[in-house]
Image 1: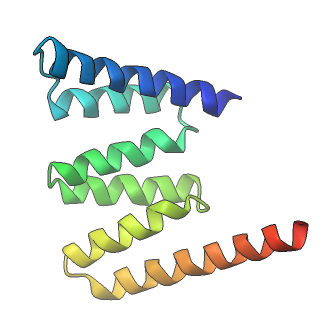
Image 2 (image 1 turned 180 degrees about the horizontal axis):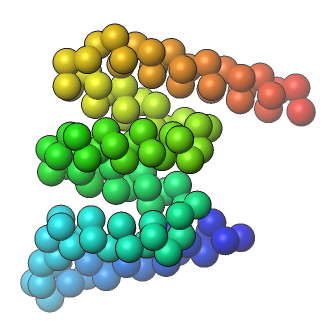
Length: 123
């Protein structure tokens, strides 16, 4: 329940930015989104969705070291956040670190295989 409430609050923050930017012409910069996401993470540290969104904002701004740090912190907090493995692997590729990219992809695939196997056995 808490996670869904947090996602609704996050969605409202992002929708307000969209409304201000597209409807009335007020532009929230990417930095404003990063600041808001960081504040939101400080308030709700267990919200992995916001942590992932922060990393993706850093990638959009080509702030790769910060994106890398955010993704590694996210996986340290929740190693089962499967979508992050793909994006972290792509980031390592972009940085030319193919060895770490392969390790992350393999870890993500292993995680998803175990998760799928668990779901199949529960049903």
